[in-house]
Length: 138
Image (cartoon, rainbow, N blue to C red; front, side, top):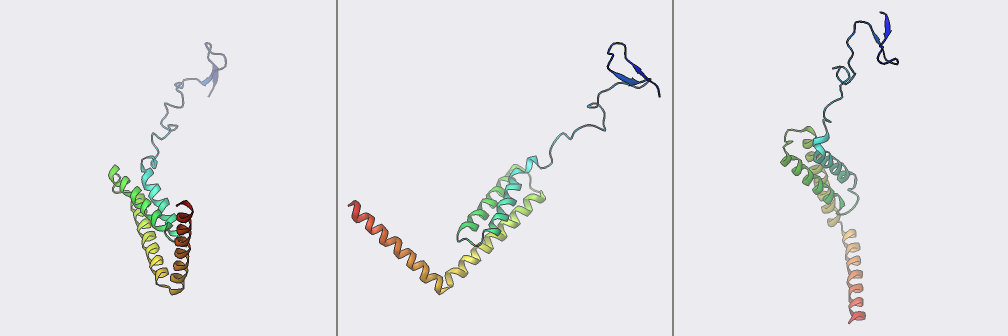
């Protein structure tokens, strides 16, 4: 194949007999027109909050709030029209599992007599602090 210089543009070289087209017109170099996960932001957020709820089960109320946010984002993704999405289904499963584990750990803590005594002591301290603040302000 012989190369020649286009007379109109001295810096433009091309193969003889080939059609000149830029790479954006070629089917091999086209960029994808959409990101497949761009429309599933709420489903991805649901998965993230579901995973965070499972990892935050060592706190008292935090995993339940994370799981409820995960379920909220899943409901928003469901209303947006992505009903058959795998990400949406996984977000719902992770959020429900995190919520059940959070509720189960909270129930097991509340049944523990040692934890009940600690919780009663903390609540008594808060009640005493509240009464002192009322005496000082009134």
